[in-house]
Structure formats: structure tokens, C-alpha cells
Image 1 (cartoon, rainbow, N blue to C red):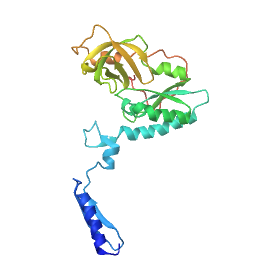
Image 2: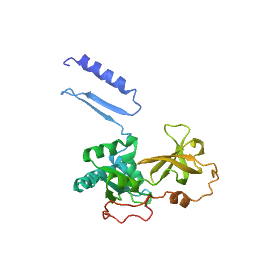
Image 3: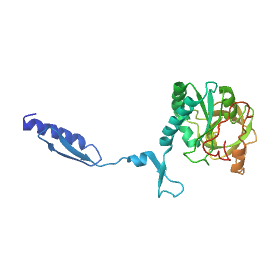
Image 4: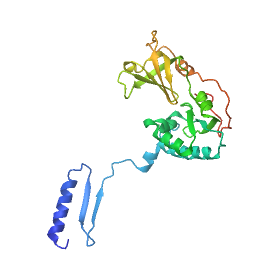
Length: 254
């Protein structure tokens, strides 16, 4: 743009467009190299805020790595575990905080499925909110059937006390309960958020189960939190190969 009027027209159009942005912006004139220098007020979170969370121990005076950041590291470690395993080992039970394992199992478990496809191994998760976010331990390994039997916390027909924490995202009439990260969809419980119900397990899967409320539904919240946690009954430990955990497993594991 050799002509000044063309440069002025460009700058006028640019500034008019920037006027629609609520964020304060400053633009300089077009330089001799044909460049426009501009500054814009930063209104987004910085890299520290994106990759970390306020530390729960010091109540925000320090920061810890976020669940997303930790899950990226754990994905690398799971790949290393898969590579080092003998051929007869097809699956692993991995202990970690449910907020971290949710990074693998959430959003349709896309991350988990991609990991399993690339490693030709299967991964199941257990753990409780009491575990540190950076806790990682392989607690069991074996065939897919052996690990699945150990990993699933319920059997069809189990009766368990749960607390409805939120409505179901896709089924408007259902409610959702969570026990150490394991999701239980409860039929017809969308209006009972915050209440504790006795339910019967109808169907179980790797990361979630479906349940039906029993007729005698306690809705006054008298049951204590220990009842909710103790209701999750582990299936029998049979077969498979044990690995020594990198850290001592917490006593309140799922």
C-alpha cells in the first residue's frame, strides 16, 4: 500500500472493528514495514491458573497441579506400565484420586479408549477422594476378566445407600450418585438431589451402574456418610497377579 489513503482506510476499518470489542485495545499507525502494532488488555487466565489449583492444605497461599495436568503425566506412566508388562497380562487396576481418573473416563471415555487402543491393554480405576491428587499405584494386574471382576464395586442385585448429587445430564428424570468416582444413575431421582436413597443395582459397567430406588426411601438425610461409603461392596479378589504399589495404598480405597 504505497498510497497513504489506502493505509488510512485499512486503519479506519481495523479500529472500527476493534471498537466492538469490550476489551481495551490500543493500535499504532502502520509502520514502514507494513506492520500494525497493537496491545490488548489481558482478560484471560494465565498459564499458572490454567495448569494449577489452589492448594487445599494452605487454603490458597500455594498452588498444586490441576487434575488435567496430572492426568497427562499419568497417561505417560500407564503407557510405560503397559510396555513393561508380560504378554499374559491384559489389564490393570490402577489406584488414583477419582477427580484424576475422571479425566480418563469422562466425556465418553475418549482418552481412555484411545489409550487402550494404542497399548492393546485395558485399564480400570479405583480410589477415593482421600487420596492425594498425585497418588498413582497399580494394585492388580491379570486377564481382562480377572481385573474387571475386582474393579467393579457392585453386583447386580446389590442394595446400597447413595446420595443423589445432581440430575442426569441426558435422562432428565434420573439422578446421579457417586461413590469414590463410580457413577450410579438412579431412575426417577432427578428431583431428589441432596437426599440419600436406598437403591438396587440393576446393571453394572466399568465406570457406571444403573439402579432403581427401593420402596422404603429414606429422604430425611439421617444416614451418615460412613453408610454411603461402606455400601460399596468389592467383588471377590480372585486370580491375577499383584504388583507392589509405588505408594502405600490408602486404607479407604474403593
